[in-house]
Length: 227
View (cartoon, rainbow, N blue to C red):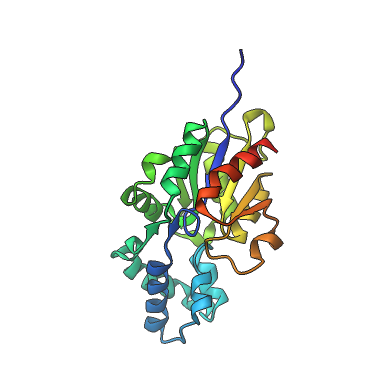
């Protein structure tokens, strides 16, 4: 009897699996201080969590010729320990175990540089609960969420756009970049509302459905896989 291919669930990291805002926001504040530029308001600072940081600096008052300086200043704080000012959302490990027990292949797909994503997943016990951790290159301005997803798909033996014969693929994320990046590969995205999206952001981007609480995530994933 032919066995059905395992579903592949791609999981965003910041705002989906972990509450990473404290460390990221502290680093962003530091960078603006080093550059002598006005620090954005709290809502704007939270919007930095998720997208490539180079794009966020450029969009929020940092001149194009100073973006690299801002990134260096941010990483001075982040790499020195700020990346661990972070926590796994309550219930996430249980969800990952439930998905794996149901036969799903799990992979983290984040816009965060992989050199940071891997030790973060190691530190917080996520690496052992997934089948791969994929992130951007250190020069993240050269990468998009779609590029990270492409790397994950290729490494895990999936095609792009996804072929239903290879088994279903679903993205889970908290920002519009997750939705758009997945769509470039013909993948639907399930949005989670406990992350850092602005009101209406996920709906406008085209998330297939929204999940409001971590305990409901596994059930929502199974619903989408059956759709």
